[in-house]
Length: 193
Ligand SMILES: [Zn+2]
Image: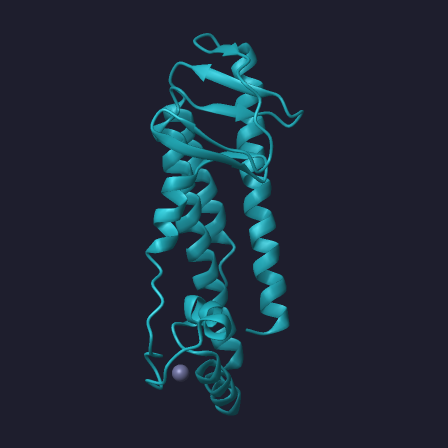
């Protein structure tokens, strides 16, 4: 992956984080005025804490309460095979894993592939595709996160931008669904045509 591409990916990730914070902030504001929401202080957790609530494990990552079990499961779906699917040689986990996760081939194959793409004058087209698939990955991750928020919206607690934790009772489901659609639409619009 080119340096430029890495920077673009970081940009998109930051952007998604900003969107998440906006979503959090938006509903935190609404919760204070809307009828049907009640706010109560609960035990404060801070960044990196891991605790069990209900029968699930939670953590706070980037200021957002997340279900650890669910995120781990999503990550587990990316398996790491012993042999590179492209050159059939054994892969070295420490070197090849991140390349496999991104490109489904080993580091050497990726180097060869990128050199070939450049020789063929297809680099620009290829970059477009990888950026779009990065965005697809983010949309997928965002959907998992958002579905989790929706699933737990009745008992979910949120951290406001001021760092307060609020617990809401009452349904936020429709608002979250609306926000999920808006955000996905926005992410889709970041793709290169
Ligand atoms: Zn290979």
